[in-house]
Length: 191
Image 1: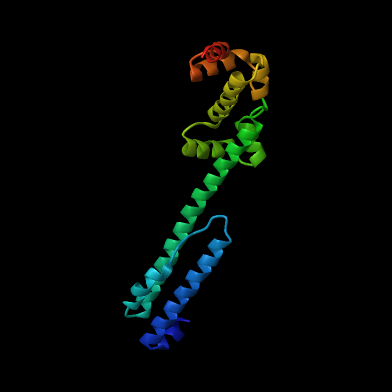
Image 2: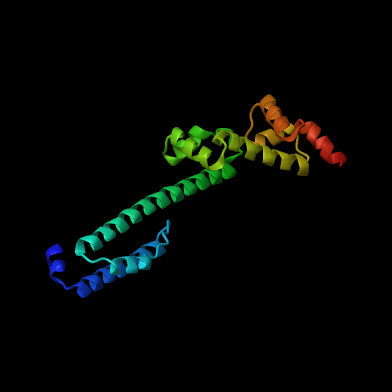
């Protein structure tokens, strides 16, 4: 194709390149429209850059740089979106399964078919907290709601939110809310 393009006069070469950019731009928009990870790019800014080139080699270099930039952008965007989807999936799993005492990092990793190290790293980077702490926070939140709104015993509440060890539950609850579950309920009933 290079030999054919070199036989074209300058105006035809530029017209060919601008048409090619237009086709690529349209194709990217169509791909993004049907993608879970859309990439919003407008290549029309390349038109003046191409028009100022005097040789095929200069124009070709500009196109190569465009493809390199697009590839890097897509990779970064895809990775970022994939991590976001993964973290949202983990959070949904935790919210839906918090009553299960077996819910843990290894359980989540096995359900997702991924390594514990990988999902732990991504989750911690995104949420600034380890998965196990996040699980405990969700459980404690639901325990607090049950304490405030229902006349369940502490043991019933523990079972409903996935805690199996009373002393561990009391320790975490007191650390988060500044009182044991019984003290917390008493304070809420007085107010």
